[in-house]
Length: 433
Image (cartoon, rainbow, N blue to C red; front, side, top):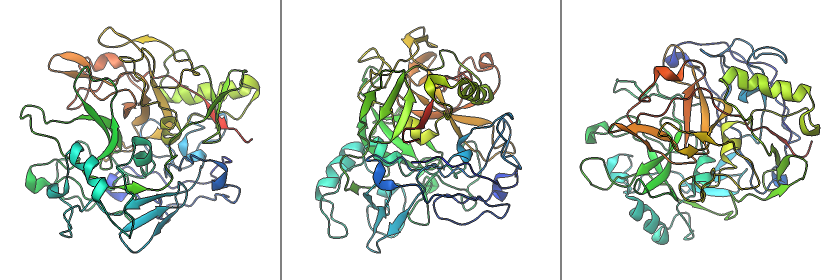
């Protein structure tokens, strides 16, 4: 896979309702276009092809930029400036969608009761979703399964806009994090008392650390996050329900094939990506993280000068969901990698959050203020007066790109997400270059 610099970018917009996006569906932006040569992208070259994020704008700390920064300028080297395998779906006309990049076939709609709409009645408990795959038949196939978290995350599209905090009821102008040209989608069912952002999809992965109760990793295609969700609702004790779509084909998807190259780099022969064995060793704000990568390239770090800050999907591809600080005493990553030890908000020995080059766009007048990170240690939150691992190692959330963590002594949001701002960096490059 070859990374290709995008040459142009759409005009900055500050109001979420006026944003224009391409995503996977291929509609062009009214404010500009990108000239991308993807002819050299050979999907067959990677057994675990990491699909591009679909992010089409460049951002600073506030919003989208008129023009992407050039090498040597602030904010150079972010997600939009590199392209991976572009999304490529086929609607099979029978309720299934084939992802021509990953080799996975998907159930097109989470309309489980078949009544033609998507609402709370379609949601399933984890046990129901897991068991239901065994009797599911669609398109003439009966080998469906509940997707792993890596399979499910392959569908996320970061041309979406996070509506968290939006208090309206009209969702017609909202943009989810899944390609609605191919997949049926609905926000949370307000008539059933749900929030707009209650569009969590279940994976088959339970968090390996059960010290705070059982957590199910899911992707929220309404707000663009991976979180570990409790299997019961707080307070009521009733079982939590999720949207579910089943998948079939390519049972090796998400399986890494790491090789220690003996020179400070780790190659993943499954994704055709090369990673730095060590991380940055210190936390950085997002702009400085991008600058740190540029400085490493200037010094020909580990013999290469084409390192980049990984996009969100590249970074998630190296999470090991069978490891955690509380069970293996390690970061959620293969032990071939070195991860700097930190002390977390609860005073525990832990491991960092790592920046991606992907912006988590939101609906406000300053849509570019948050950058996406992956938690390779505990995803801490302040709940009921104490700090706990609220969402699990392997969660994908977002932090302000700049600011003072001391301004968030009890975290942020309904789960009190720990706000660190100074997150770590792990470098990536294309192994074939």
